Length: 441
Image 1 (spheres, rainbow, N blue to C red):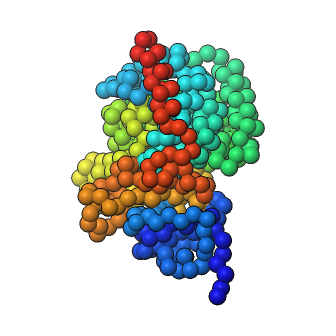
Image 2 (tube, rainbow, N blue to C red):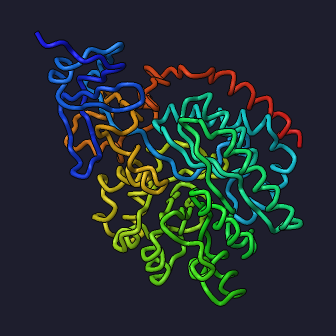
Image 3 (spheres, helix red, strand yellow):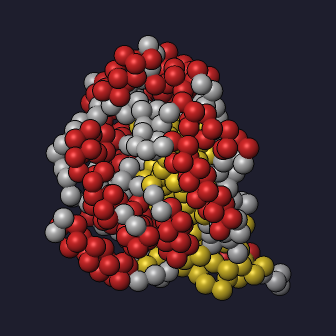
């Protein structure tokens, strides 16, 4: 009798959606995990005959798939969820968010707001996020506590105050992040100037230079509103995309959030430079920013991923909701029901997200040798019966509440909807305490 190979975890008796290049689906499938990697996947019987695991999980005909990748967040903003709604972006920002941030965002609130958001991400199936905000070291601490994978970067805004002093401070903070998390298996660092309308040309160029010198992702907001595009055109005689291209900050290591107001020429530039896009449909709809031309970006072979934006402008971090609205918004805005299919949308939230972060060799699909970032969905529910097409259900029927298990870097951090890595109730209580101070402001 052949001795079985020892592994740490086997998930079996499920439908495995690999999201690999051929979108292979394995019925009655299983995944074998050792340490932090997927070492095998196949039919449940074959995997169980080949391996002996410290822990086995019968997923009861659920769906086993890659964890979702949220490429644009502001996690600590959960402390402001619902504070200011039904406003345009400029009013929301200038009259409400900026004053509230100045008074209430600090190390303590950033940590607890980020930790609460990490819990929300885990509960709704996200295993990797990319965050831009302030006090990002605290967000990194929260990610490690929660056991979730994150790319973090200090938001750089140079329009208020001495820009040389601001940039020097941000680079000092970034150097601290690089040093603090250099041994982390979960947290990576990015350079994240807010936008071309809140950062000077010099700040943008210096930020990109620093990113290139340290092999870091460069993240920025781009062409989010019609007003932004019109203001930049009136000031500089070109679109924001053309401007960023002219100053040399667009390339394959650039991630641009929103990209709502794009011309054909803009899309061609994004394609030529290899820029990746984070599409945030819920936030864009709620702030009435417009509809990103996702179909045209697909036609231009631009990598489009999905982000939720912050929960003060969304107002949740459920990537399944984001998927549903991304597909439907593209269809209704073009009167074309055939564009941005369910299958394409699921790829936006998984492997495209990994590509956007430069992590496609590590995460985003279930393949041998990749990191074991996996979620399991319970399909034994009325709204998920019957099943003719799994991708259809993931986009049009599933919600974050259907996620039963969440595994990151080979560790089970949620089992049967119970977060194992930290006390989510404590995080909620802490954010409630903070909110009382915000209410009194």
